[in-house]
Amino acid sequence: MGLLRDWNYVERAVQIPALSEVIREALIRALFVRDDRVLPADLIGDLNRVPRVTVKVKDDGEVRKLVRVLNGEESTVSLGLNAEDYHYFRTQLGVGRTREFGLVPRPRALLTYDWIVPEQRGVQLDFSAYGAIEFAGDGHRAIAQVGATWKQLYDDALSKGHAVPFVPTVPLDFAVGDGLFGDAPFASFRGDFGTYVNGLRTISPYGHRARIGFEEVANNGTAYDLLHATLPLAAEFFVPVEVALRLEAKPANRKTLTYSFEDGPKLSAALDRLSRSGPGIGWVHVTDAVAAKTLRPAVPPEAFTVQLSLAATATGLAAREKAVDAAMAGFKSKGAETPSPFEVPAAAYRKTAEAVGRSVFVGEVRIPAKLLGDFIGKVRAFGDQSSARAGVYASLRDTGIASAFPSFAAPKDRDKVYDLSKGVRTIVSGTPGAAFTSRLAHLWEEEPGFLRRMALLRSLKLEIDAAHVVQPLIAP
Image (cartoon, rainbow, N blue to C red; front, side, top):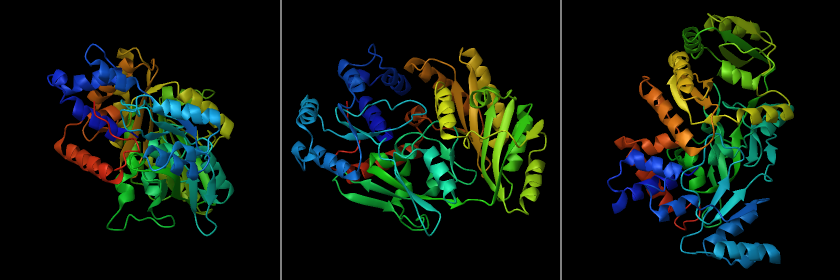
């Protein structure tokens, strides 16, 4: 993540005399785009400073040693590096040691954009080689190392009689850890990613192995739940290395249904009805014509496409499908042969992910399902006005809320991303019940309750990470 680092930096920057009269949003923009006409040179230096060393992690023992070196408990000699690597490590981290050194995990795939303030002259952890998955023999659970890809988990689970309940709304080639220290939008019809996380195996800022939550049962019924209180920011308190996940039994009968719609009002009404349907729905995925063309280039795109995974017993599947058909009344056509973006071979999934990843994504919009069609229309119009063709990927929850991710065919430069983010924010601000949850939206937020929560999380971080090792806060 990086929210606390960015938020703390902005809070301190507004107190600099030279910037005290700059409007907060204008300052955030200047920080985001690295505007040297507004910002002092030392702030520009902070924003352009990146981790000096990247370490490819193979086991959690390496992480423990790194943490102890960075917090001063051990010498770099204990890392066991060869002479050349040892010299490089010492040289890189020895330059300009005026700041505390920290470490930050590197996401495998980043959906939107990185945080404003990079980790300062520290260590970046590459978990791509840390990808083992262990499935429980006495239940539907798994322990996945953070470098394991979601697609690997999904396919391996099915081969062993399990089902992974959550899918990525935007199908990039995410790792499981991207749900903790990236921005992977994992969700299902019945819950978000956190719903299925029983616990985390982590390394504390003092190099100790620490388990947050339980591994065989969920702890959301307990009075003290540090896991879910910090899960969206877990990588700012600890170094997550493995995730304990709750899976489901592989259904005896499963079917992917595809519905197309001609206009937004019919789509919205159908999704609103579908959100109140009974059990059996695993996930519901929605695309407009632009997004559908990216996912399935060989299939002529419809204005709106809804795919859902339906599971039931052999005798109950037909009845469940009939109920879903009734909820989806108003569709133009229905098919059962169109493959979902999640259940294709791994190579095909990666190829599609590469195509999807070329677009610019600015963050998540949570919106009542009954307003999704109208919202997509406004996003498409805004994209046309901005010379950035727009599309939308979305998923539906049984709460009646859709999670939508606008995409734009635009350059991935910071000025363009900021302007597109502001445009989406304007649309959301005029949509009842909608919320924009992008990285920038968090920094723009000035609601008193939100600011109190951020201050509480900051104080909690300073208590847990008193060694200032895990993405340490810095001030300009």
